[in-house]
Length: 239
Image 1 (cartoon, one colour):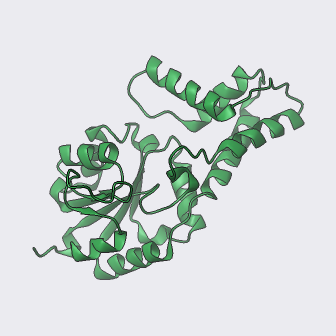
Image 2 (tube, rainbow, N blue to C red):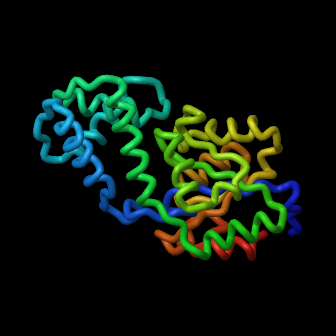
């Protein structure tokens, strides 16, 4: 089947698809040290901070509790950071919250790297005339923008869509419907590639997008949605 690059948009999931970070490994919590450092910085500024054995678990618990109380929406990391520090007894002000939030974004962005073959893939696709967009499930739109800058690949993408920007979780098909609405294209003209069945394949297909499952975890089992690839460069054989 011939695919016209000039009329096709390729959408990449960010974490664990186009970019790698240690948290892609099962049960590896890559931001534990970042949360520890945040409490150290907070104490150094004269705020009282209660001791908490597992800050990562506290942050995750507050995230889940807040989501359960409100509508189905994407939470902002800045808000949950404020909630965590207040829960620990640190009555911070908005100026310090901004500083801590920026630290969190800067340090989190350093965890993400793009492999040279994936960078080549972006270069090749743009050279062929494909329009590229990036999608990501994050409560901080600043994070993917920082990651793109750190890895010197911002110029390959025409748009970045995060769940914070749109305000809808990625597992909800309306996330992808909003992207279609913003771009003003037929959903069938977008090919989305991602490593999550729930967030990247099922939701995108329900919105009418074409999908390619990046099944590096499952090694493309017979039961996995097709097409399925285990190497992003295999995308070139499907276009």
